Length: 417
Image (tube, rainbow, N blue to C red; front, side, top):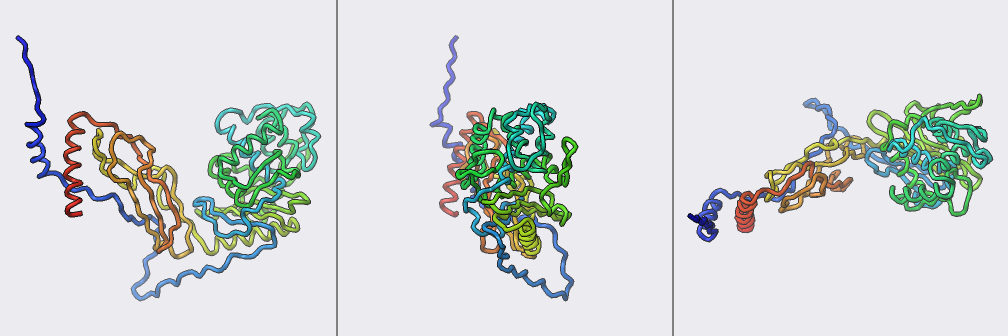
């Protein structure tokens, strides 16, 4: 016997519609204004006077060609002068050389114990030296310290040859990564910073690079604070005098050529706030230290950096249609820091603008909205909002039910929203 089963949506749909017209609820637009979570402040006593708002003076004027002050956590610029002027960076170039060595170590492409052969070209390179010898085989870990601590041009060329086969191909790699990091006013010709008319960078670009050095490869960053380095029986000091002047300073690099003047990229951390200063084109080793101190003191005195949200924290949930689950967790893929004038953290608010009508499938990490952080009426930061989980497409009946519910939800919102 042949049995035939038929199913008519024409007969069933009216019943479905009638049911869902009773239970379908309107879905509000997913725009919320949660307050960030600044550090708790002491509660005032009943008769205490409110704290006066901190007055922020103009940034200091420095005896330098170009400078910038950046918060390493939030990336906010606190002071600047000619930050995008293209200038010879001298040995500040080695920040990129060291960054690429650290990157290769972190990716497992090389080991700190790898023995690097020293060529005659590396040995003959002029300027500051680590004093490696032709025919030596030197561990990567020693060469990296020679680059960072004593600004070894010989060590920089040796690593360029080891990683890329020569100075020119290594410079090509340096420029590719400069573009990747957003260093728009930078072009490298060599890994040392020795003068060349087409070799230049800017204060802003060097601050960006330094921020990546600190945040991307923190386990290598301790090298930048070491005050001496010995190789072949020769002990040399770190040229960054700020390491001796302030216990909060732990990096990064000095530079000098006749064309560049005396330059310094410094970083200092106090409590949860880390600042990066870049000073280019001063008149003496002492001047670059003093001008850097002025910038760092200004930043710590008048600003504070707050951690608002943790990486991966659920900031909100929103409705997803036609998926194997009804709600999607939304957050950010990095810690969210904001730098604000001191004593104004209670003025911070955050608005989550979540895309309406999210429909499965949705991939983890997909951008589903935007977060805007304000200090009073001023926008001080923006971040993409991401799906923290995957939502796959639901089954046939789940999708049909959601279509009906969504229809009435949107209809309801249109009438009463």
